[in-house]
Image (cartoon, rainbow, N blue to C red; front, side, top):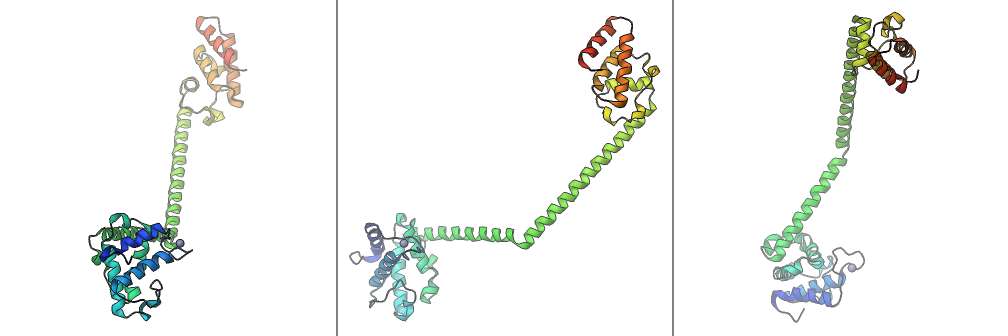
Length: 281
Ligand SMILES: [Zn+2]
């Protein structure tokens, strides 16, 4: 870099890093990015006309013990000048970030508050610095959100909401059960108010009626109950009763006997065909 002149010396450091395959990774835990950092700090000192006398500018403890405050500021200004003239392609690199992390915030390293953003201004390096700052601000914001989400208060709030939701779900289920029970009572009351014939017809045709919810006492059980029932209705009811037992099983037998003993007619003939085919006695 001593062969380059003016602010473009830093570009020479990047070229040397490429040619020598130096590690430029920020915060490299293996090599401390030592060759690259020594090169740009020494280059800046040379540009500033500051003799290093063997002091290693990559070591923060050498500032300011080995250099005067004015020398520190001059070295830093030389480095900032190098950054200002760095082409955009060099700014989107690990090496650029390594330099930024080394000097930012300048106050810590040099004991001199310097506004790096203002110094770099609208140069490619300044724009990249703004992007790095935005990125780290975003990271900090996400980190804060994670911490907020994981905080005991947030966890307690989520638990409180969960418990509230469970209570509301439970209440809704209970209300639905009450509604169904009321509906069932209404249905049973209306069935009880109907004549046996009406009830049998309803059992056969009202598909919204759940036969399993009908109390045994409302299922007709006498021969006389099914007297006069139409064979089509009897056949439909036998099909609906299916394989149900007890009160329904008894009613099915009554209906089947009725169909068998009915006088031959086109309608009863169809009914017999339907029932004996589909339903076991
Ligand atoms: Zn390394």
